[in-house]
Image (cartoon, rainbow, N blue to C red; front, side, top):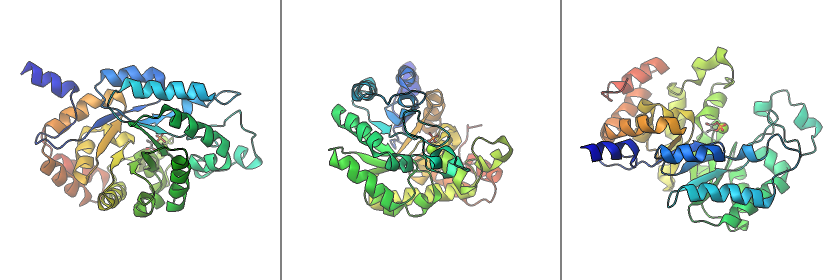
Length: 316
Ligand code: PEP
Ligand code: MG
């Protein structure tokens, strides 16, 4: 019994009836790797690489980047590590780039040239990052782009990655247009990962940093669940994996709903892994599916949450 308790405290993610859902960590820098390993993460579902670029006068050297990416891969032998290319934006100015008039004075930075849009304008930054990732050359290393709005953008990113010999190329689904046309994005990549933080922000036109509109940021909002469900069914039709790396995956009941909707992996802050692992281990895939259907049948976030929980006994 002690062995079983131990393995459910740190073992692989699975439902009580054995449906596997690897539980991965969101990591924001090398100092978080150890905690992710200690919490039993099976890999990294989102390595935010902004720490290498922000607040410095010079871009990181190739060697510095290679060291950072290699350290992440080495922390998880046999586990996958998804490195996200730089998610810079007008609110995260990059001191080493010439600041253009447009980039320094965007009236709505969240709607501006952030993420992949910024990398397209400064391809030398992306080239260097992709070269460093290619130099690590591990089967377990995957790369994905943030803030991708269209299939054309996904295709452009995938071609740039493949030109450097990278395999395991994905994009984030965090803009409603990308969820609506997920099939178009999936056509050129190997996997997608849903970022529910930005997806909620853009679906509800509600700034994610503004407390006054936080009820619209609630991942239980049925419209958000619909966008997630739409993306997951497009991935399933394409036969490609779709993970979740937004904070919603850290809520144990929501994690069950996401699994019920077909998520192939869940990635979250290391501190949430134990509770999510325990929630999955206490319910069947059928219960997760019923909880997802029940939530989507409701019209408010509070009702959706209550309806899901009625199928997930033991979660509060
Ligand atoms: C997201 O938007 O859900 C996400 C995971 O990315 P970030 O929080 O880094 O924007
Ligand atoms: Mg995001």
